[in-house]
Length: 140
Image 1 (cartoon, rainbow, N blue to C red):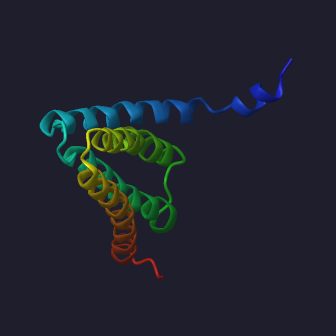
Image 2: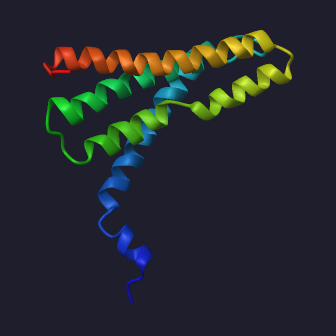
């Protein structure tokens, strides 16, 4: 007997595999950056900020390329967007970093970090989308 849950999952194997494979690559890249820019207690978390801003920039490029510039294989977005970039960016670490700074009494650093991450990530994505559209000849 096929239930509603089975019907929803049927045919999702390739997408799940693409997300999983991409996630491994993204997480490994994030880990490598973390080795180069390890967090220091009470200091501004530059590594996490950089990861999230770069990941958001790349997401902006990806979204425009695969939805407006060219036709892409159906597994490109799950692999690159959800998998690689989802595994690379780390907004959970962003939240933990901010909480750790606040708990440690570093309010100004925490607020600067919160603002820099939000403005930087959203701004990077918006700029990347605009530039990619112009370079790709997409009218807007």
